[in-house]
Image (cartoon, rainbow, N blue to C red):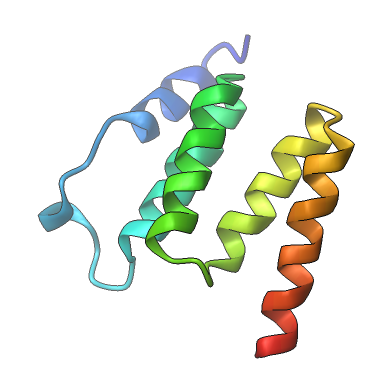
Length: 95
């Protein structure tokens, strides 16, 4: 496990209500940061669900797609990773 770092990541995983979000963060951003903390805690299924929620909330959230790609790279899910990379390329073409 992560030792002392686990406490910091666990704090990030706690649900936060919308009024607590900083003004510059969207709900999608908050979900991405939660997913990243879950990924560091090796709670991969929860991390994937949080990334997917972020994408559902804001399909153009490149950071969510990048996080999902990182998860699939770590778990060696090549087909899913390839699909996510294609989606990222499509998003970048639109910009």
